Length: 222
Image (cartoon, rainbow, N blue to C red):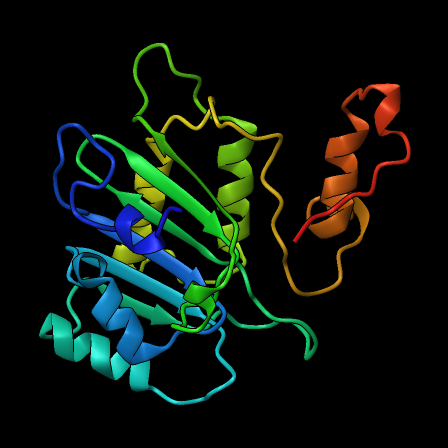
């Protein structure tokens, strides 16, 4: 099978190769020592953002990443704030910026050694940057940026602002998926009822037609 580590290396999956210029890592739990050992190119990329929601309230991840990188330059380590005392940010994904593309990887595993030896799910796609014929935006792009807005990072944070700029210059219009479904902690009312979670899944499926043989089929999602 495909290993996340192999998707997050310099030159990964591209004919032209090239280094990872910027990376955004989001996860629930991160095993610090294992993460540093298994993702060396990602840890040392020019600009790195790590967002996580570990139950352990210590700074070991930030301290070790700073040590390996030799300082805090172009680094952002953040625990996204929670609007209520219930729920958490548990989305698991990578956004990697290369010279000629942007890669999105959405997966199901916590960044711990034991979970990498279990069966996990992963979806990924490489996207080219916008050209003259590209649409100015698309639903995938707007949903992705809307979700990242809930991480509540000050826009003047340069490494974060640069990542948002890279996503704005990317053409997501050929995303090979029905839609992007984000899980956002909190209460969602009014126009936001169908924007996240199972209600977003419902709205996406309502807009599709399926053969009658699927009428009694179970719906499985993670």
